[in-house]
Each structure stands twice: as structure tokens, then as C-alpha cells.
Image: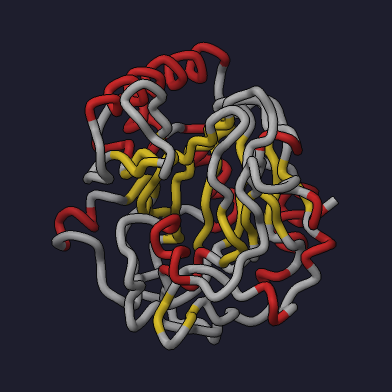
Amino acid sequence: MLTQAQIEEYNEVGAIVVPDVLASDEIAELCRVTDGFVDRARSVAHHDDIFDLEDSHTQQQPRVRRIKDPHMHHPAYGRLVRHPNIVEILTDIWGPNVRFDTDKLNLKSANYGAPVEWHQDWAFTPHTNDSHAAVGIMMDDMELENGPLLIIPGTHRGPVFDHHADGRFCGAMDPSKHECDYASAVPLTGKAGSITLHHARLVHGSASNTSNKERRLLLLQYRAADAWPLEGPRGDYAYYDGLLVAGAPVEPRLAPVPIRMPLPPALSQGSIYENQKGSASRYFTPAGESPALAAVK
């Protein structure tokens, strides 16, 4: 599915956009299902095992910022875990043995949508090697104004930055340290049905949605089957073994990659949005306070 040029771009930049991975009818189904979940959230007043809510969420105006583990809650999401086009892209990058990790659906309401501060996924989930990446399924056209994924090219080949504040993990880098050239940020934009693929060590974030369009990005995390989580498998071994989407189980491969453990754990638990409430400072400004993208334009 990937060309050699796309593979080289992924290895060099740390991310690529691949167009037309999902068909229009698949995207339409995902949107219908997601609309149903958002409507269902009207009866939810607090974060729970499915919904992570915006602070401004109300019954009259439901605002869901994340659906947790969507593959466990509806088959339309679950089918994507082993979608043949996605699996082929991952085997093009890593070879024949690939394991699913976890997923989440991040939603940004029109004219709102909470930002996500700069971070590396690797800070949350260190493994024995860094053949680990996230696939982002664009359910809507991704444009600069509606808060697309922003990346700092090449940072997947650098250090793992500190994601702690006051001695505790907070899931966010401190922008006041100027550890990255944030002005070099590149947006991953494209049409609905496209996917993004970004390396777990790549520094990335996203601003608020300042447009009048929805922004829904379904993120599925994968790793090569020889990349084993240092904190241990999620669930029991039978569950872990069942997460293989291609190939066969293999022994862990140890690689000389930088590691920081996400410990002590964040004071606010539940999602990255909650974790980042403990950050020392922020880069992105929520919509309504000031132009959220001013710092990256």
C-alpha cells in the first residue's frame, strides 16, 4: 500500500498522511455511530468508562472530547482494528508481525474543542523498542482551522522529553523550556477517509477548533509484535495475545531507545486531558480566550 517514498518520509519526518484509506461509506457509518454516542452523552454528567467530557458539557449542548476504547463499544469501530488497508500500511513499515495496542476517538466541537498540549506518546507507553505508532482516521476533512494534529518533524529521532511537573507525570512537555522549535510545527491535513501515521516518539499536539466544522479523529495505536510494554501487558495474557492483527507472537526485542517512566502517576486520571491539568504551563490557548493557533502560524 505504501510507496518506498512514503516509507522514507515516515522514517525521516516521523509521520505521513495517506489519502483514501477508508471508503466514503465507511466514514459515513463512523459519523452516524459517533453522532449516536454524542447524543447518548446527554444523560452523562461526569467522565465515565466511555466518555471524557468537555468542561462546558451540558445536557442541552453535549460536548464529548473523547470516546475511550471505542473498539470495545461498537462494531463499526471494532472492525477498524483489523482493517486490511491499515494492517497493510503497518506491515509495510514494520514487517509481518503487528499487534494492536489501544484506541480513542478525539472529538473537537465546532468553535470549541479542547487543545492537546505538546507531548510524545512514548512518554505514556515505553516499550522494549520503539516500533510503535498511532494511526489517525480522519472522519472529517482536517484543515488548519479545525485543530488538526500538529507535529515537530524529526523529533522521533531525538530524546524523550520530560512530561512531569512538580515531580509527577502530567503527560505534557513544559513549553517554557523551549526544548523544541515549536514554530516549525507542521499540520497533518487531508480529506475524510485519509489517515495519519505518526511515530510514538514524535512530538505532537493540537490546538482548539476555531472553525464552524466538527473535527473527529479516531486514533488507533499499534506496535510491532516484538515491542513489549515495559509496564506489562494490558489485561491478562490471553487478551494481550488476542491483540495480534498480523503474523505471530514473537519474543521481545530490546533496542537502545531512550526511556522515561510515567511515574509517579498523574494526579488527574482518566485521559490525557485530565493528566495535562497538572502541567506547569501551556502552549495552546482554549478557543474563546485568544487565537489558538497564533503561536504556530
